[in-house]
Image (tube, rainbow, N blue to C red; front, top):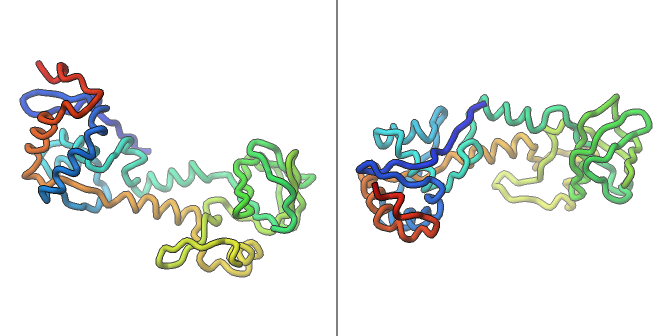
Length: 251
C-alpha cells in the first residue's frame, strides 16, 4: 500500500522555509487571491500522478507540492488523494474483508443491536461490527459457523429474523437515481431489496467507495507562470498566519 508524507517545512525562494503546519491557515487567502487573478485551473488527476510528480510536471520541481496541498486543502495525501487501482482494492479488502451484512425483516426487529456484542442463531456466532437501523442492516465479523436466511438471531440487546445475507463489499450503501439523487429507503426500495425482489437504484459499498475515490480526481492547480508570485505573496502576507513565528523565516 502506498504511503505519502507531508514535509515538516516548505522551501521558498532565497533559501527561506515555512513550517508546513501553518500553510493550511493560509489556504483561503492564497486561493482567493489567485482566483481573482484568474491564475487557478482545474485538473483531473491521472493514474500514476502523485503530488510530487505533478509538481515536477507542472513546475519543474517537486518542492512545489506544498502548493498543490494548499490549494486543495490536502491534509493527508493518502486519504485526500485518489488511490491507485491496486491501493483501492487493498483498501476495499482491508475495510470489508471477512464481514457479512444481515438484512433483517423490518417487522421482526426488537430493540437495537449494539456494536461489540455477540449475536447468535443458536448455532453460529459472530461479533456485531455495526448496526444501521435505517437500513435494517447488521454488519458482523468473526463469524463462526453459518447464518441463514429466516434464522432468528439474538444478542444481549436485541433480536430479529434474517431476510437476506450479503457480502459487505457488495452490500447496500444507499439508494440513488442515475442522476445522483438519494432516495428514501422507506419508499418501498428497502423492502424490495431486503426481500430480494428488486435491486433497482442500489449503490453498493464498493460503488460508493469508487465514487468517493473518483471524486478526489478533480483538483485545483496554479498556472506555472504564477508560482513565483505565490511564494512572494506567501511571504508578504505571512503575518496573517496566527501561529507563524516570523523570526523563523529570517536566516
